[in-house]
Image 1: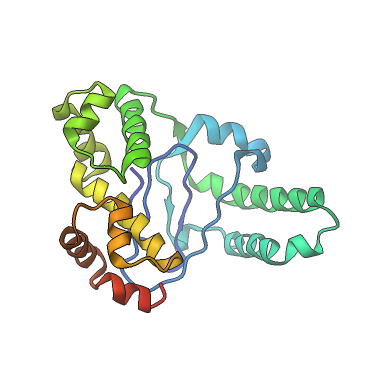
Image 2: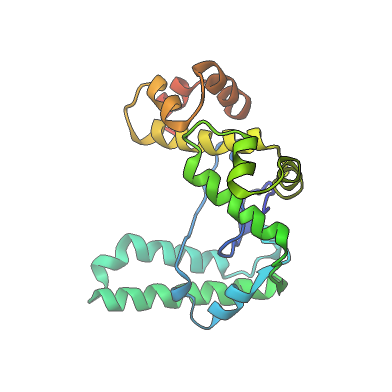
Length: 224
């Protein structure tokens, strides 16, 4: 699982199908670029067949033009759709800047062949299942039955691959969804924790406090 604390100017490059997460512990700004494999040109084959030995690059390791290219791409999304003569021209400009950015980053990623082991396949299956069912009552035993895997082996996968236990992972998924609802809806806090799949307001508030150091209402009022 891709997981590390990033500081100002650092960069993370996550290839398709890789398990990863982002957590914010302090106030900061990030530039998040998500794009289709079809936009990556001749880099597509490498992205499909290989993965970075580490997806994290410190600010000191980045080529000088990386952030220039990234900000040009950001500017394209903000202004380019109005300035481009047609949707096709805009798409070509977008793809060109993505390929420039990847050309700068790829040499520093130290690519290696993808791991196609059984554990990796199981990990993708359980992540997908949880993403589809996290709003429902869900237990490790139920997950094991659905995936036809021993719950003890499943526990090992969580601790070894995801570096947390089943309950912690499930609650992080639920918390991320709850934060989205707090930011984008006027739902009551009760409706938020119910929609996110928590079994009580007490467990929701406790997990919220442990991870964000405040209350859901304070988070909403702060306008995060």
